[in-house]
Image (cartoon, rainbow, N blue to C red; front, side, top):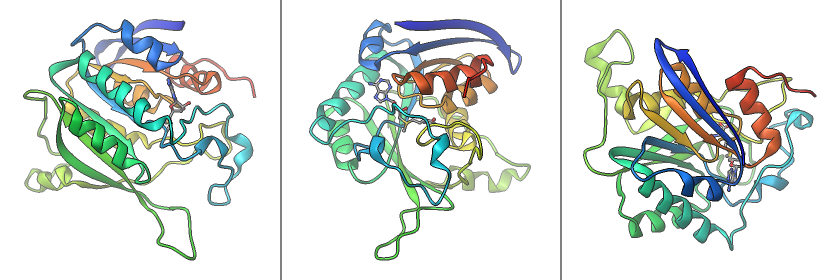
Length: 255
Ligand SMILES: C[S@@+](CC[C@H](N)C(=O)[O-])C[C@H]1O[C@@H](n2cnc3c(N)ncnc32)[C@H](O)[C@@H]1O
């Protein structure tokens, strides 16, 4: 297992960072029961994303190779395994966010119903600049499933000066633009940091430990550390792992 542990000061807190370049199904069993405060994941969607070569006329030459996708045959077992491990390692007052497209959402929902998690909310992330399609509706959202154990942390705060309007920020449709790293090496897909930071702020406190076992380019890690949370990141693709190291440890990447 290629592991890197680090402690550093962020947002006035000492934060701990534990990064693993490995298959999460090898690393998760090494994490103690009820030791993590929040899990936020964006697992592969089971849509052969490793073979996709187009993306809105953008430059694909900068997209790294080695994205680990799961086949539709593997998808139910894959989903069951990470949901069971997540339940085991989460503390009782904690929660989990699963971000997914719609294609194989039914497998995830079925597995959640069969698990001990409570499915507390179904959020929508609506994004700009979707892939244009001429003969069918243009898909411009992802699903975010909010799973909880017992009495989860849920912070209520205003995201702007206007406290009277603060409930708007807890609405189940979240509109946040996608971000593009034009000209830079990047993962097949990555989430906007503002979206991830918002979810982490609502569902954890400074000093808590956030885990992402499909860490991609490290968005969850960057968001977690920047607001004083500890982070455990697991990513099997060595090329993506280099991006994580660059983002979270400041390591240079050779193009
Ligand atoms: C949708 S991407 C995550 C993108 C990430 N949210 C970001 O913002 O950069 C899913 C990632 O899971 C990784 N992955 C798939 N199976 C894995 C496994 N068993 N263990 C660890 N990582 C895995 C893929 O290589 C891919 O980078």
